Image (cartoon, rainbow over all chains, first blue to last red; front, side, top):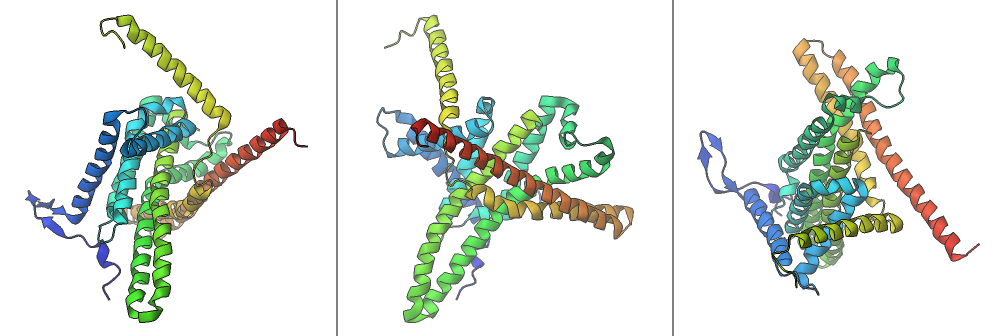
Length: 240
Length: 118
């Protein structure tokens, strides 16, 4: 039986090295490229016709657009429209990446912490810059809990700062851990199918059910990542 | 359809767009769409939030200790601060879920009242 962790191995497809830095085109890069092409393609094709009665692709793009637009309206408010492009792109990238990973033999790049951490870092740094651009040094008042007595500040401010710094960690670890655990579990249980011969029907049924669950999680994690990005943007805009 | 060389048609369109947007925001607030999957989203967030706070605290403490040579004291202090930060995270999420649930309850009661059920 192949190791259940083998699916996460990075393999180099086209070796490239620039100035001693390995920037080879790997299977991970391949699936990220595919994600951008498929995600962008669906939206571009869906938006190109603009028919009154939408076709399949148009219905999909309209559904996703409405979903994200509604999410932004609810969490950030009308002011959030300005941030639609970045939020939408993040959602599409994670969602399509997760879904591509559900195809057998595909590589799930969201199961690598470095990928999800970079995504989370983009959000974190972007939101921090947004906060400073909006409020200048007044942004630091974000770390002072409202209504707390001054003598508590030396204790509360470090806690708030740590809580703020933990955002990119929890954002990236949540996505990565869910994808890693789910795909490993699928592989482990699928391994029993062959080794149990006739009784392999039982793990097979379990794998079918778990695949459904994993599809839900693939969507849910993209959704959670997006809604948290919205909440962080709202925090930076409003400061509490 | 529209004549391309009439500049005020664009203004009119702008106005109509603004109206439509305002209407839409108001309409959304009225019926308050139910978010898909309800509370399942926030629920999966909580556990990682706690661990992330501790991880950041431990990391900062370890770095400061290595830099200032005060091991293991700052590590211990920041471990506790990190745990507090993690719990702060969890509490925020919980309060958020709670307020959302309260809103939903109020809304249900309102709609019940309108339907005339005692």
